[in-house]
Image (cartoon, rainbow, N blue to C red; front, side, top):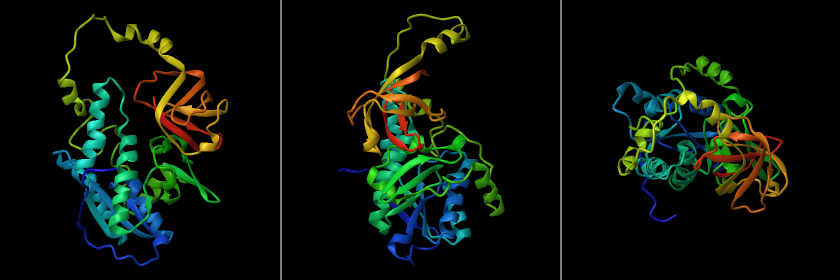
Length: 334
C-alpha cells in the first residue's frame, strides 16, 4: 500500500520498550483501557510473554468524563502490571479508513460496519505493520472474544467459548498469513470470568456500559459521522405514512431473503469453500449462524442459500461463513 496515512509514535508513557526475551516470546497488546484488553495483557504476562501495551490515540470527545476510558486508563493498567506502554497517534488512518468509509457507505445508501473496517484496515493492517517496523514485534494480541485454533502449521479463527459475547464476526477480515501470530487470550473465557478476574485485580470492571458509538472519537454515532455526506444530497418527498407500527408486520414478513451474495471476500479456509457444501452463515453480529449452502465455487464472490429467510440483508452489511467447528471459512460485503 502506497501513500499510507501517517501513524505517529508518542514517547513511552513511563517505561521504554527494552525486550527481555527472544522475539518469539515478544507480543504487543492493543489496549483501549477496557476491562477486556486489560485482562488480556495480564494473562499474557502471566503466560510468560514479554508484553508491550499499545494504545491507539484517536480523536476524543470534549466530554471530560469519557477521556479516562479512551486511553489513559490503559496506561494506568500497564503501570500497575509493570508493562511498557506507548500511545500511537492514528488520527489520519482512523479518519480515512473508518470515518470517511462510513460517510461513503451512507452516501451510497449502504449499511456500514465500522468495527470490522477498523479491525481489518487499521488494527490488523496499518497498526500491526507499524508495530513490526518500529518495535520488531511480530505477535499481536487483543481483548476480543474469539479463538485462534492451531492445527499443525495452520491457524484458524473460531468463535469464542462465550457465544453470547463472541466477536469473531468482527475479525473475519484479518489476513490469513497473520492468523498464526494473532493471540486472543479471552477466547476460552466467559465475560463473567473476565469481569471476576478484573475485580480481583482491582481493574474496576463493569463501570462502562456497552454501546454502539464510534470508540473514542468526537463523533457520537453513525448518523453524525455521515452528516457531511448527507448534507451534500438532495431529497424529494414522495409520500407520507401514518405510523411505522402499521407496517411492522408486513416489513418482517417481506424483508427476508434466502439467497445472499457478497464481494470483497476474505477467505480463511480455502479448502472448505466448495460449491454445494452445507455450512453456517450470518449477516448480523448478534445472530447465531444459520444453515446455508455454498452456491458458487468462486473465491472472489460468496453466494449462499440459507435454509430460512434472513431478515433485512442490506448492502454494506457483512456475510460471514462458519464450518461445523465454529471456525470462519470466509466473509465479505453484501
